[in-house]
Length: 172
View 1: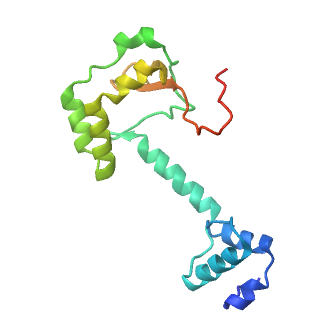
View 2: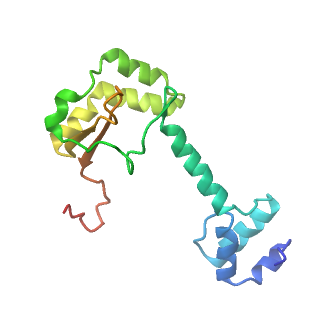
View 3: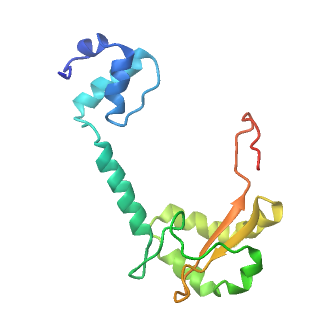
């Protein structure tokens, strides 16, 4: 399939073909035909190449795998391969101690300045506790990962946020 080089050639394309062209480049596919034509023409002018879906998936998998690397140790995937079961709040005494210096060290290790400032503000405001008190967070679960490791995973059941106009979410 030859790619048009002029705006007039793109105007001859049907909307479905324009959307397919934009989809392959991970660009917006909604709007009037004139907008899609302009976006497709701009993509050609800026040399935006087609995105290989397999490469994008591999990149996401690599990013996720890097998150599971802690101090040279590869943690198990908390969504699939944990050797031990999740325990409810009755296991709270098993949680590792967390001191202020641990939290400060975590904040100083974050390179994204905006994220660091938001998390520090949330910490100072006691947001986690207020979420628990207000009922947004329900039960907190603990997983020791392994008997030898001092690391653990924590997860919480929570009330999802939603737009006012959405149909209310039903918790089973």
